[in-house]
Image (cartoon, rainbow, N blue to C red; front, side, top):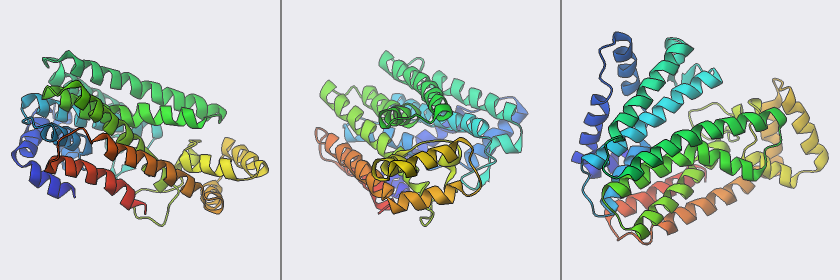
Length: 321
């Protein structure tokens, strides 16, 4: 689907890619080498795709303001991945070595900082100061989400409300920045901006919920190892489903094992989640978020761009059907 969307975006997608690459230019050989590696092994670039689609769905051109917001969202996203890899001591991402593994944790942090600085440089002169504010807020949300997750992991007392706050801060906040900045950049009316914000919120929440479900779904080919969340003492939606439906003796025993994870914990947790239909519980909530995301687009005029925004939400549902 992403290739089809990129073809639909046409020149706008090419202009985004050119701006994205140009923003990373540096005279430092190590930075040039690492940046070239990251550009060659980048992901699907969902967030800038959303920025460009929203601008088109609102009837506006993908002008330089839109392109700068699109590039900033991908720069910020990649920077946070590099920082996350250091925090998680992750040697591989998307099947390729991480910057941390190729160079060092210190290098990965510094390169991530460089990408963050380039992201803010792209939007600092945006004529609508709300754009700078929403990206600045996103940076704060990312840090707060990580801190809340660390705090709750230490005590294993994360609630489902806490979980929603964590995934908002760590994932959804950047979806909002990418989408709403695009709406700001084409001078959308307030009702349309509100619709874009709601779409981004529900899509972002669903995106992370889907990822958390895949961590308990080894039979699905997601390209990522499963069972990692519980080993990192992360309580996510499938576990909340287990906790809601299993006897208290089962949940107490599992929480106790999470304090000192052993080699069999991940497989045992996956089996328990299946036994008590924790995935069903999680999928119900994912479906509700995706439905809300599509409904949020109603105030936008019918267009091919809006159709693609709806299809992106549908793709998240199909992946785990």
